[in-house]
Length: 579
Ligand SMILES: Nc1ncnc2c1ncn2[C@@H]1O[C@H](COP(=O)(O)OP(=O)(O)OP(=O)(O)O)[C@@H](O)[C@H]1O
Ligand SMILES: [Mg+2]
Image (cartoon, rainbow, N blue to C red; front, side, top):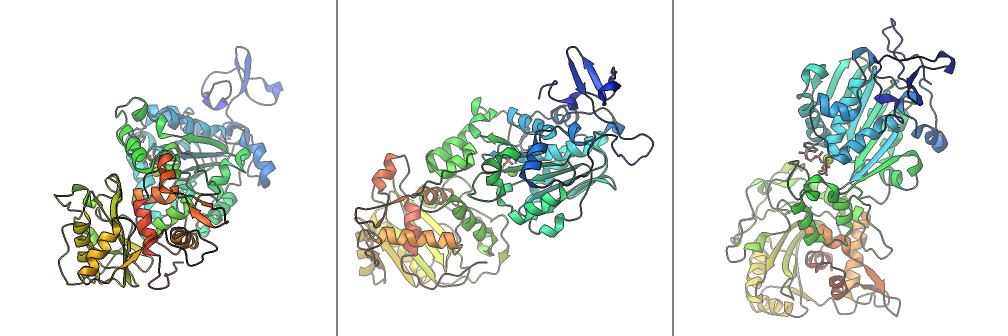
């Protein structure tokens, strides 16, 4: 932000030459005349500004466009002149909080005084929440009276993520910042406070009005449009500010529109992990920020040509090409449903004991990605009805949860780099995904047999293409009722789908689109699902992209997605519908 562009950088206590004929206060600098900040009317104690438009409600895109480029000083925004000289957000971070921002954080914070609506899309772990916390503290510190509303999709996110960060930063300068700091509220005066609200009810946002409002929305992609409408209704003063911060994973909604249809009323910023100092400098400069190692891991797990890589690493909205089978936002929504379901108690136990002979046997991606890698954050516990049957082989402590019958599916590795997968679902909730590297068919059959004994599934579908037939034969020989599925065979709806694979995946697509499936946040599974594409054959039937073609575009074999598709090939029960 250059000085010439920003009157806010000028300290109100500086000596100035005033030009009253210009109709406003000006500061004389060589060659430029800049308006300086209006001061609160002296003596009234009400903090009203002497200049400015006041709380004028303007509606519509055109009015918003007019306001968008105007710095706070031009829209009636008052700085906290009573408490000392004005300080810019970046100076505030450096001098008051004594933190070092990286360049994108500076860009975000510098945009706030300049733009009424700022939208930031970013990869993961790049300091968005940190910037939001600085913004909250800065705005309230420098505006009087003022209200700052901070929100995120769930109260847990508001309290444990954003407000925890606010507390940490406030503690760095308690003497300067002062006030009463509670869990999700910082109060300097009755008409000067910041608070956290969860974005689950629009009512909560009603009734807040102040000449200076800042609304900060973290995880903005997950907030409903109804909440944004309520937020709009509190942005009545021209000096109001809105900061949206999120991961660009959605295909619709206000957050996405901010970067597309409504771009003219937002100042848009993108933060890619590739710009993070920890990545560019190839060493951990800011502990906590995304590292080059994480980026490399994601590249390996998802491939660069994957919507998840675009959204979570590059901070770009995924390209939803017309041939994308399942939209990334639908995949993410299925994970959210999974998190919202009660978790079996067993998930709290330390799990994922690897089989020494097959250290990868419990791997489901990067650390922390596994559905069974430990306690499930944000998911309530519930009682466990564990079957007391044959012991399972070493590995995750498989628990029974949810309603509906159990179904197992097995995708058998064909190539060296592929993994065999055993997936278990109950109704339409995926309960477990286990993967096995380089395991022969006999041994894999042993693991499947153990799972059958443990869970008594109503159906076990095994991909019998190629080596998979060996697993089917072995299990049948032992008396297990398993169903071999050759997905290359004809579909039931022969005229619509080129084969069973296409039909099975189309069904999966419908389940995701209808919100009738819940899956754990297994990063490899998410990546595989988001990368699936379909096309049409010469007869106009739906055909899934071949694994060979996927390999050519750098997409790993969709082993887990195949197992998921197989798990739903024939429904055991009608999938439950979550509302
Ligand atoms: N400028 C900074 N100085 C020191 N630590 C920082 C800075 N910026 C961010 N961090 C730390 O880096 C970590 C990640 O930051 P933050 O949670 O803000 O990222 P995020 O982009 O919101 O992540 P997510 O994608 O998970 O929501 C946090 O521990 C945070 O405290
Ligand atoms: Mg965050």
